[in-house]
Image 1 (cartoon, helix red, strand yellow):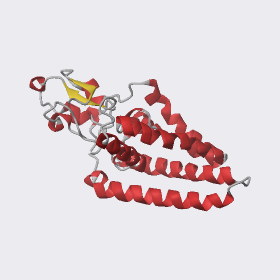
Image 2 (cartoon, one colour):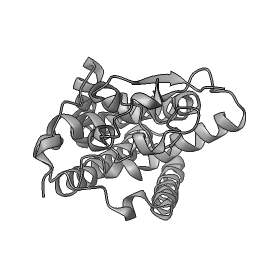
Image 3 (cartoon, rainbow, N blue to C red):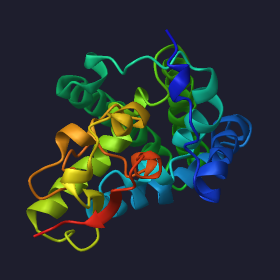
Image 4 (cartoon, rainbow, N blue to C red):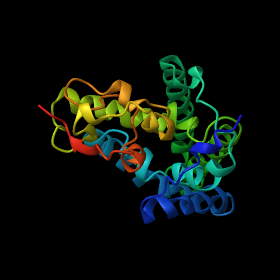
Amino acid sequence: MKRNEYIINRIFTPLRNWSWLFIPLVALVGLWYPKMGLLMIPMMIALPILGFFKGKFWCGNICPHGSLFDRFIYPISFNKKIPAWAKAKITLVLAFIFFMFMFTKRVLAVTALWGTTPFLDKLGFIFVMNYFMVTIIGTFLAFFINPRTWCRFCPMATFQLLAYKLGKFLKANKKTDAVITISNNQECLNCGKCAKVCPVDLSPYQEISTKGQLENEACIRCSTCVVYCPVNILSLKCHQT
């Protein structure tokens, strides 16, 4: 059953509103002009760097697929709860391993063409097809289950998460990683609104730590719970010490 009562605006910035345009540029135009797929290379470089400092910030604020799902699919989606299998670590691990294996295998096969005219087209086409398949699978899950189902086990999100864990281990991102923070626990109504509007089905009001912050690494820093908190006690702030 649709949760129509919770269909709210998730688009708060121009970038989140328009980044979906990157998808047809790569996944569709790239079918005829494969070099368009090479635009994915700077994205794949940016993902772990941003993830290192800000966790899954990309997913909630920049990702073209996130923009597509929130802007176009969300209003017509079945909007069910994200199923447990999509959140399970085994799903995340298997999806990441499969993606990296297939991607590496294809890139190594193309390297045999290094220095020849077709090389860049063949390399670009690998990215094009990967992005095209993600769009198909992600959109299917977004419509029939939940707009952000794919986001819970997306290999690129896992790539960010691994970088983020490294940043935490090195204690290098405490001053850059803004997380959901509650200003006053006593003012919380325990209404659950933050959980109801969360795109990735987290429950901030139940998961806030003793430091008053949400430490769940699945958070995409989209600020949706911040915007819709009825008593305005949530914000994005760097880690408390």
